[in-house]
Length: 354
Image 1: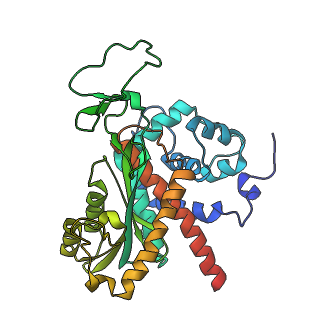
Image 2: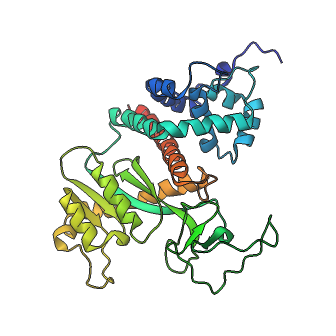
Image 3: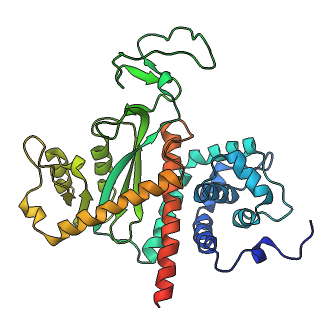
């Protein structure tokens, strides 16, 4: 096919991907030295990391469920070709080659660097609060079945059907201390609340600033009884600056140990009171009487919008990857995509109001 118009000319000037690509290109330009350290100076040419990251970003933004389907879209979708940086007649990569090159990015903490560079742009645009934050966690279902969750102390019997074995675990007491998934050993059995079935999952946690609801930190850990509070402590310690900050959270964080730890970190814990807990709430009137506490309780609910977007648009209700480090990489990258979408809306509103 011959055309006088390039993909650049065919994409409308007001298309929502245009401001996102500008922000992405600015971040990728800064990351060039990091890419150079990951790639050899000799051998067969590989996929340029900038194009690789743009393609992965499209997969998140447009809810493309597999990399094979993403390569199919790149064959005929001019919008996708423009965003990635492919010309109209440039060959698309083989899916297995694309996956192999993607795995190389896991070695250089590229997702975390990309996340921080996008945050820097938000900070320069005065979109971030440096005083008021919220924290919460959710479960991401692992790419492993209940059949794979077997005892650690004895080998499983030979399967009757290697492709789909019959496993009867009814009546068996199973826990993360005695059992482990043979498919994904890092995944743990967990449930979000009573009344829900326990599934092999990871605990995904975010720290959100309260001004515009942008994600400023992420932490993905193996599941245990205190994992959400552990993740909140880790993220609170990483908040830059020496001034006192506030941290909004739900009732699961209302424990004496957590509240005491937060105050020791110069953090005012604006956690929801759990008056039904034995011993009562760890938060008293000295905190709840302030208007800022009520504001934090309203703002913290926006963190559910983050989880909703990540699980539906970002397709992370159930991860397609295995291993703690890989799932952590994907979760941070998906949170970056959420921030880019949110920043585009906020910046366009700022331009309209001028």
